[in-house]
Length: 313
Image 1 (cartoon, rainbow, N blue to C red):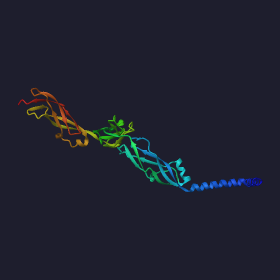
Image 2: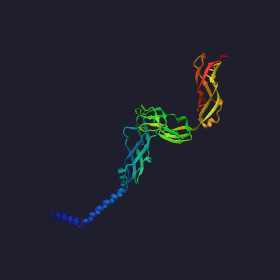
Image 3: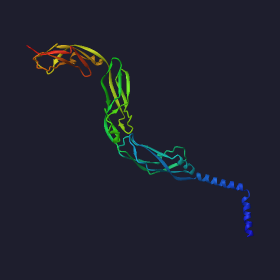
């Protein structure tokens, strides 16, 4: 018994001798082991943040399945991936019309937000199928919101044209069922003296869940300087080529108005003045005259009426 107690006392004395040095050595050994272990390459399965952007006007149905990636690197580097996980971001094409789309994933798709000394080996799973809400489509006419204010003496000739005149609206049935017209964005042009050709986007304000195809249209208008030309002695013709009918006066003065470039080539034979009697010719009849100029021009006869009657001869 005495020998055992002596041994214990000797052990205690040796253990307590220079104990701060011994504790420091033990701590340093542990730190050194941890440092060496942290530098040893290892393989780890890390969660991946999958981001999928659906086509304009559509939404994903249900949650995305979990995705993980296999990374190789030092433990201390792999730990960084938990606070800033790798990301895979995909944008689905606007032309997608089905309700499902399969993504093919690869290690090259992984993006790490911070500098981490690791290497991606694999992605699990390699394919992911995402579900989208159902889509419908319909064609609607386009109304241009283009206001043209021509300069003095100029006018718009033939109105404003839109190409294409209709666009396709794609989106959820509930979002497009009440949409029967597409408008362009608003624009105003002042002091215009030349033909207008503009590309205008379709106004999507108030329609966040639908997509317009095409998303922009061509809007055009001809603007020309307007002038007048007076044609003397334009004969009056009677509608229906009635034989033996006379008009008084037999010819009139016609004032034609339109783009100056077109009026320069105008002749008296280019304009027709027509009288259309409603009676049978037993009594003279005062008839308003109709001027028929070439397309894009307007005309007024002076006088604007004629007396139509049957010949007494």
